[in-house]
Length: 454
Image (cartoon, rainbow, N blue to C red; front, side, top):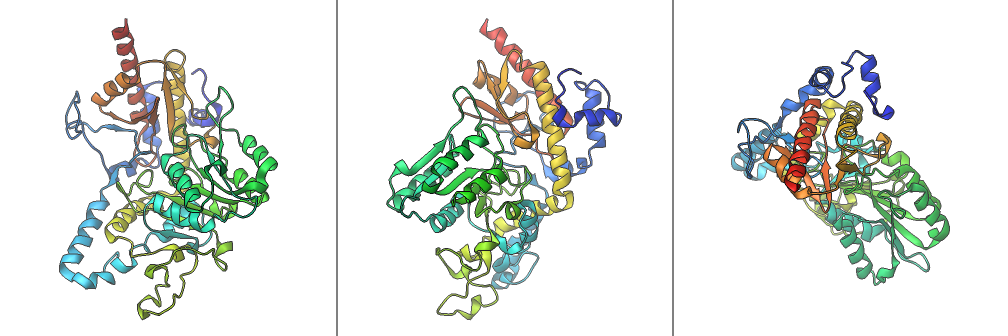
């Protein structure tokens, strides 16, 4: 039991009676037996070796080892029920589906609002809304909150930001007639992979009066680094900046307290850790301090209060809070998929999810560190669980594509971005046995790759 990371809480498990051989089938089985969230695994539909559209080896009925929830979460089985309901309502009720059923089409975003507010740490349901896709919401919020004036014209983003963020910010500057030299990119220090919070704070101390808006990701998609959102938000607000967050890889994955942190706005998608299906409906947050004096923004019929929407007024009666940014009826089909997952989050509770996330990711880190890291790969994700979520990003010294292809044929589903393999054990449906089996297969892949090389 060497090099056991103290911050993973695995030591606490040993005190409670787990087998001392952490790298053993017995330990993984014990952890799964003690797992308070184990029953939720059966609420999701797993692909099998036989259903994957790629070559696989093994029993075609065996479930895959799915470690790709950071890209697309698994389908909740309840999604089939809710989607069928919506289709049946359309067929049987036609226009009556707008205001009848479990998820009335004209009110489709409402059933999941309270759960969503809890997940992102909103103090009021008026601070959140469920609408559109992530980048659409990003444009709607940024175009409203970004007000270049005088010296304060710059936008701060992180190095290697997700393409949506980079493209959206670049196009925003162009739309506002502001030169791209007003885009500031905060980078890791030379020779390092991660960004230091104090470097962001120091930059804002130096040129904060030139920065109009900070737009960063809560969890960095490439490295898996969770940014210290509260510290960065506080630093931005002290400097007089608007602070917005892209929570695509953070929502449903790490602890969020957007209201208490004073975040101005945030946006997210729901198809990763929120398991709402590919292209699933997104969401956004607008802090309540803005609700009585919203910045000018695009409006549509759904920006109107739902209580007076069908009065068809000549002038808008604005909805309160984040809902005033809605433009049109949320798709009831996507809202149904979202609700199927949100109800699972409500039943499980974020506290248990976060507790298991730390243990599961820490267990994977322990196995990788003790068996593979010294010779074959580097984990570039922060070691401190407070500075990461479920994802670990692995850099290999050689043969990444071959290694990925090998583990894929054995039923491991993860993804590769550039020269990094991203693996994310999701606490709702992944087990400790999944993690151990993944490391076994990865070790085999590294051995085969080495033999083929020589």
